[in-house]
Image (cartoon, rainbow, N blue to C red; front, side, top):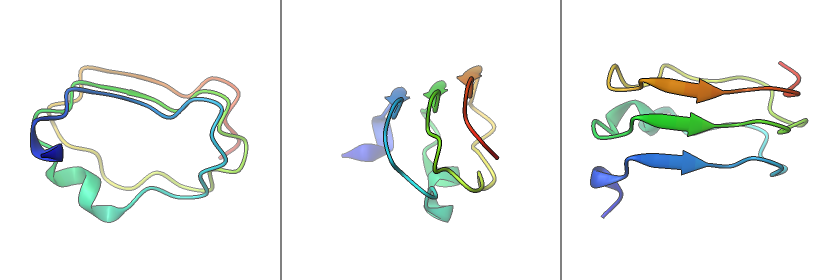
Amino acid sequence: MLSSLKDLSMCHSSVRSLPESIKHLSWLKYLNLSNCERLQSIPELPSSILGSDIVRTLL
């Protein structure tokens, strides 16, 4: 189901970390983590990523 995910927006969420398995989302093209002020780290991302937004994210 998630294997065909193309856009993932988690902006303004209270997420602290992303799962390591995110690197297996081979269809993921865009990741929005803007305003995720609790996010502590970002694991390896899939090579399919074409764009991302991490504005106002404290890392």
